[in-house]
Image (cartoon, rainbow, N blue to C red; front, top):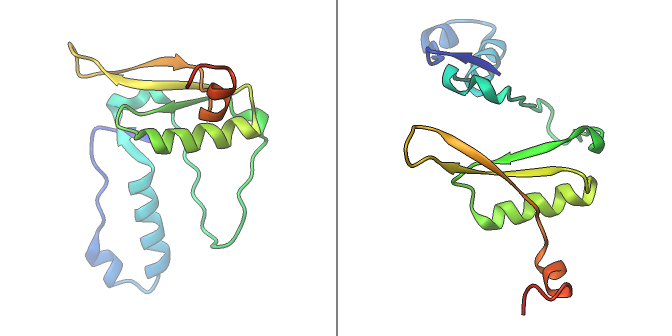
Length: 126
């Protein structure tokens, strides 16, 4: 990620008046997808972008240590993400984002994910 004060912009004239349209479009779109406000610098976020349709992107599951879920993430998406990731690496940590009531900040709390079925098996859900 690139963290900056200025928002990236697409130069439409440069796109339309250039023979290398595909490469310029790719470069400008990549810049859009990989730029955030410098107020998020502490995240040290990584993004991975696929350029070939139908290819499989893999990583060593043990390399994933933590996942930070934003304050607006819906419960169904959270459930799916947690189920998939725990199936690959049971040691991954999950953090849920919450908006501060006093500041323009998001703070994160670690949580232990337990699937609905596992909760029933443990007697936590009736």
